[in-house]
Image (cartoon, rainbow, N blue to C red; front, side, top):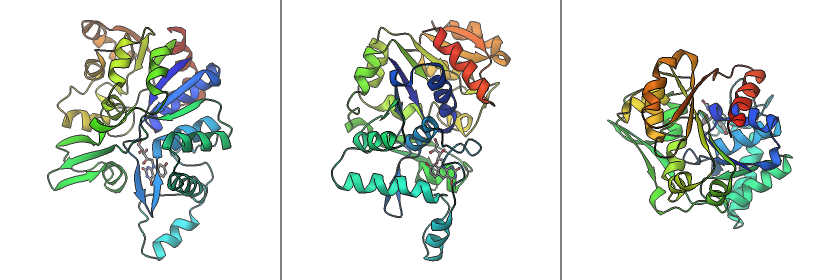
Length: 306
Ligand code: FO1
């Protein structure tokens, strides 16, 4: 069994490749839920949904989130009634959030709800939230703290960030099966997701970092940074805000206590020696995933090392 740790859009590309290059029934995908929030009274779990839709083959590959071909009629009407419309919830996507909110209110845990949704969509891989407890990624700005989605979607990552925190993380528990998946896996893959706000919250869940260190399986990570810039999203800005070096080396350093193997881009080949100095075997590869064939060949490259 392979355990995969991921955020949303960036990580989903590799998750898709891995699911096509291995037996999906043999995959446990542990997702960030620090981006979750409540809007229109609905519990929204963007990364769980991005991964589930991707594995179901219904995701909007261009946007990187939501369902392909979705319409936005309900959102327009929510706006008419004075509701928030900056977070683009599609009509089909809304059915997911309504179902999640209903099942949570009936007493199911977030992992049970996630299982229900992935089964209904025919997803064979196990999709697990990092925790069933509420953990909230908070972005500190000079004007005060805001939620991750307010920073990411409403403000389009603009403005100064002075810190990132994960409210509730110290008290939360890993979702059932998460720690065992890491400990019992034959390989663990850390997707090229934002190390601060996608992988960071997962690592903040008590026990996960220790399980990554303890597991006998090789732990392999793919860099989300190429030539000092994020492949997508604000990873570079947030790394800088957290005082990390904005490079593949900076990511490797943040994972150095548990990663055995690190994949970096050809453009970063000059960093290989420096990263190996951290005790991490480093491989130079084609890590950009523009097409389905890129996703599959990177997945093959990763899986071949496990
Ligand atoms: N990202 C955006 O940039 N704009 C949106 O309006 C937006 C809506 C949205 C709706 C449902 C969903 O599951 C995800 C959505 N995302 C949107 C993506 C998401 O907020 C981020 O990609 C992740 O939180 C970061 O991993």
